[in-house]
Amino acid sequence: MKTQMLLAAEGEHNPIIPEPAEIVVGLIAFLLLLFVLWKFAVPRFEKVYAERSERIEGGIAKAEAAQAEAQRTLEQYKAQLAEARAEAARIRDDARAEGQQILEEMRAQAQAESERIINQGQTALAHQRAQIVAELRSDLGRQAVELAGRVVGESLEDEARRRGTVDRFLDELEATSAPAESSKA
Image (cartoon, rainbow, N blue to C red; front, side, top):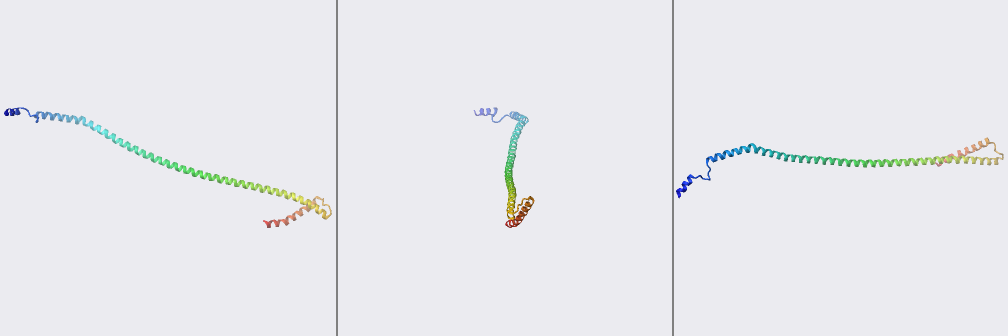
């Protein structure tokens, strides 16, 4: 039995160690499979890998571009905000200056109106004074003629003499009152 086992072992093929022909056929099939994979599958894998890498890199680039665009937009927004604030400050300053100018114009108008009213009052006062002086002269002249007529005893009816006498009297009266008025002023 032992010999039979040995004979059987020598004549039979050992399943652990392959036959040399199988090794050669397996090696050729493996190399053929490796060649097919290398020729067709690997380039496709490389292509898919490159596309995926490009998409990832493109996504990163897009994200960076979007971030840069957001940063530019933020800077523009800040610039516009600063510009709007400066414009608002300028408008406030212009409004203040315009208000001050309007106030000054109103003061000037009020001052001019006040001066106009004062001038009109002074003109009216001077006119009334002149009118009163004229009335007083004529009244004073008439009374002076009457009084002089009584004192002298003759009638001063001659108009030319009466006017001359009255005018002379009033001139003398003004001459004596003028120095008194100038010393008061």
